[in-house]
Image (cartoon, rainbow, N blue to C red; front, side, top):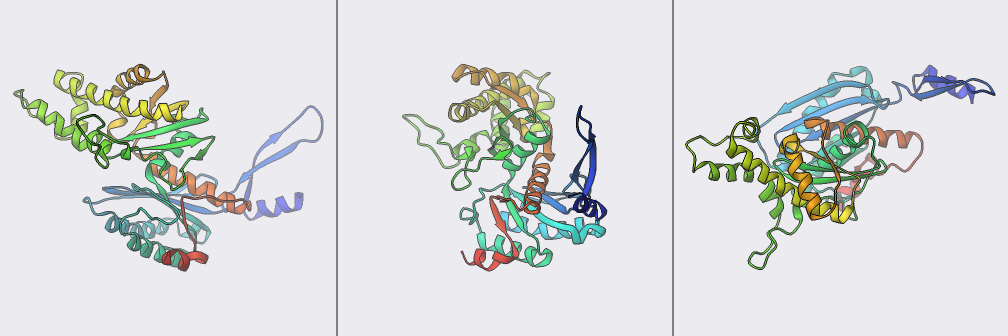
Length: 356
């Protein structure tokens, strides 16, 4: 064993992490993954930007690339990933041969066959090219799931065993993490709260994606505009401007408090089903701490008190989570363990997946 460990340390696959000295017995050295054990890349392919980070399996960051663009259809946006991956690997040429896997986070429901992904074949064509170019496993994961994983390991939920992450922004969604593992459901749809029936009353029928249409940032600004019509002031043009004046402008305060209660209604539905230890709220709108009092009060009124906090990783949560997923996947493969993924495209199964 000592000879094997020395050999692994020589090639940079292991590195000493500390010394254990007990009351009896010999002193022992603990080891962790070394810098040459492998390189992984996490990519957040968002609505208007792509953010990629390359790290070693040891967690040390090697390179970072971020690019923005005008809103595009999902499949066209995904094609930008090829350029971003080429750019980030150009920043770490010494580690190029150590690449172990790539995780790409998307604002879509991800299943093992990508059955619910619009323009599925176009996505698969891009993934096939990436697989042929880099000859490593390509993983896809839902962006909110990645953000939930990041907050669990490195953010607001790191001291909790069962946490959910609610994204409230342009879109809405939820990621569920139990004991460090993502809960994805049977078809990868766990946490797709945008599909909850809404509205639901004797006079109205639920509409597809009704929750998202009502709680998304666009609808929030439209309601603000309608409210502002009765005042002499100009309505805020985006949510950051709305929250910037919330403490000084009564109209803004009223709109934000109402939105917080609506978020609380959604959170209460999730609490009633899942009973989590903690709710982390994030996203472009949800990351504003001004929302917390009304969200907490609404949840307590409708069901029972739950710890509710704002995420700590802001707009980096998704890419950090994608990197974490890539590290876990690569390490599991090194150890010969079952490396699970929402969707896996590897060279040895490329033709089968394309034909599904």
